[in-house]
Image (cartoon, rainbow, N blue to C red; front, side, top):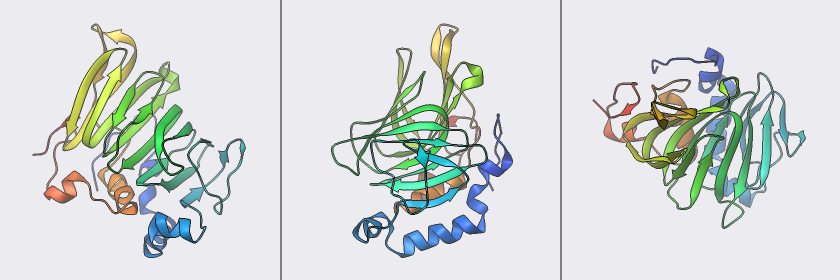
Length: 238
């Protein structure tokens, strides 16, 4: 189990992937052919739904399908895992976001996060972004964790768990190339003249990213390499 640091999140939120219900649901989703089969059979793209979740302001049921263009809001104690196109998402409790449409119905152009937290794995593609109140991340093909902290003036945390991401906060820009968790804060006010500052790995684990990757027939960088790095936010393997 990955060692992890919690900041404003509970242990249960981080260990959702251990629940028997999720493991059974994920296995069934994959065994039935994943998203392509679900679309062909007109089945839901929701892998797991726990608690109260609103889809475009209405109560979400597990038989529904989440599409690009939809807005989502999770309540206290809730949890949502779903797949769109070649991307998989796990939404934590007390989150509000919009999944904006790209070139096709099954292409996400922007994951616009208002508050809360999302772990996500993205297949290869272009012109896709994660946007928070203080940070923008240009996604190419990667696994990431993003969280917005309203109690800190909507300060944003972003971890490029693996892959390449263009990160911009307040005009401070960098290209993040990570093998193992490179993390940033998108500051509300500049710190030492910078809006984009380094961070440690918090509130997520390797196992979460591995299971999301499996849902879209991928493996993480550390699974491919067979080794890991330090969870210090530097982005490098040992």
